[in-house]
Length: 517
Ligand SMILES: *[C@@H]1O[C@H](CO)[C@@H](O)[C@H](O)[C@H]1NC(C)=O
Ligand SMILES: [Zn+2]
Image (tube, rainbow, N blue to C red; front, side):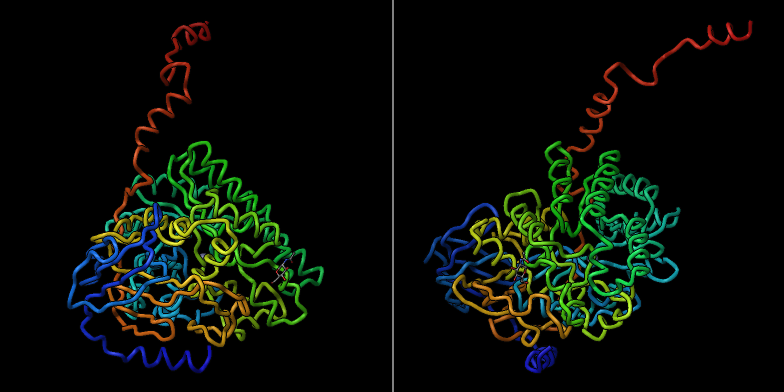
């Protein structure tokens, strides 16, 4: 992180927040997932008070913000982050303060963080640790809970967590011997999710296959970052995605596939959706913005930056996934933000097995998505809003509090200037890592203002955030994705047994009598 960025964060943490005044945004184009309109916007008390035709809103005391020539959009929601996390023996440099401040500087105003398992597998205790860590928050947030083992206590803990407003559980199908769960666990857990009205999330890669490939590559002397790539080819992602879709189908439960990085996995999801199954595909800024070419760099620090799982793929996959996101095969774009320092990445210099997996993105996602979807001509601003904000709010039951600009919604709002050009760099980003996978990427379109809870927290060049201002968002179970599932169950069982009711009545007495003869 650059010196300037350090200073901004440091000052920001002490900046007392003045009593927020009402804001009157004039002359911008308000974009929601369903339409864009030239409109004015009135914000007060942390909420959107009114949206109306230009010049129609009266608020003499409000601070006027000229939004002409800018898009006014719902703040981004990142469905997949790892802040203040311990992973592969390392603590992520970003905590809830620095990570969220970075997010706000990039137009993201809300995120869902992964509660990773604690030693001894205490799920509720682990969750409590994250709630404590999140007291440093500067924007609104919620959590997904990672489940890595199965017993009665886990089933019970899931129930308790749902009561506390958590409605999503994550399962790793990779990281053998560590986080990886069995097929049997998936079968149990998906049914439990269904009972609770919760959404199961899967990291879909075949961990057993990867484990064997890793051993083979290390033995062959391929120990650098390219070994990481070669050990996890697209087909291991595609297979696991299909397996997760299959278990979700059996349980008739909605499924959320995190970080879809390859064409094959995307097509599995699209096919399931075409057949009427409720599968949501999340892709990442790294998947639509980058190909894996730099992993083959002879400079270790450069190559190591891109090591993440599933890996960043070839250009062909990037273009396919990007088009799929624009066209509707995939539903939203997140980051899996788990940025490391170059020193932490260097722990893997002798073996890619020891390198912390993960990349930055919480700050860059909105800009990368804008560049890739809008400047490519693949998508409209409304579609951009849908995949960066609205879809996330709907899937995780935060809508219409988040994900839309309308009266009554939270005033999490961004202004984007489509003509402002900028270049992404570790020397100017706000996240704490000293490396950036999007280093040197030129972007046309810049978030010039971020409003969180009705306050201007990013003015295009500096942050005005307040430690502790972020709120935990409870999310009720049985959200929109659950509507109709019971009816579907009844119809499906009729379809599965078209030959009459089960169990089939049979006269076994006669058979017994015959056998006794
Ligand atoms: C991959 O990405 C690099 C930039 O990182 C770019 O120069 C190159 O054209 C892309 N395509 C291929 C096929 O490598
Ligand atoms: Zn992740």
